[in-house]
Length: 255
Image (cartoon, rainbow, N blue to C red; front, side):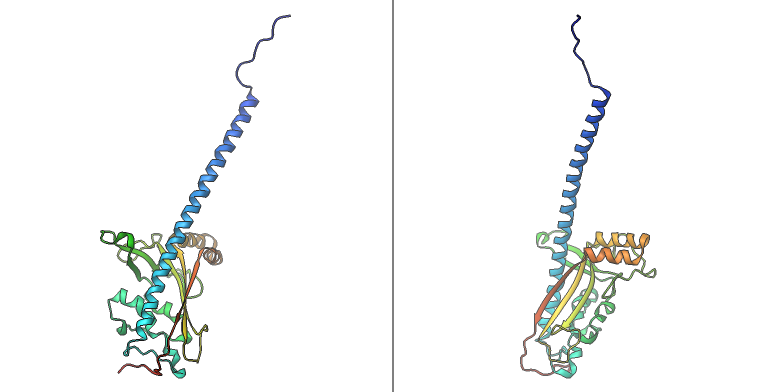
């Protein structure tokens, strides 16, 4: 009986099984890298929004605190005129846009109509600040955030007359990294309150510029509701409570 010869190479079935296993391994590795990259990107977006939120809230808090010690700002603490209590809040944004002193801001915001702040501000205002890591460098001025053209205080407003620009650029060609989606104020925890103000709650919404771009793509292909839903998931909401000391003054007005 002749000896049995040893087999060399692989059968077609073995090659196919090996290719399938190799493909699965590659897909698994790719998925791990994709998930990791996505997590890192989302983390950097969240860190950016946290930084932007602190910047915006710090500016607003500064204005409120300074308004309390300036006699030429009409901050009233008596019950009949509490509607004027948020006059000065708009100036944090206005003075950066117009270079105007705080008490010359041409916008008056009433506490009973606090959402008017969003519609009253220039919708293309750019917030700029100096990042700690960039002080003294040519890149010190950083275009961190812009106010959205697509929100009107409570929900996105994707209208044809507010045509979306893919680059999210302002008039100077600076590309935004984050979008201020809404800004709201409450006195003593309420939209309207006839009692003297004891504290002001500032509530702002932010999303990354990338998320706003994606929302607009969804809007163009699937409509307003889907875009709103996407932003509701990816939007981050921040709040800060600023306590107002009663210094015994019942009325502060322009002289």
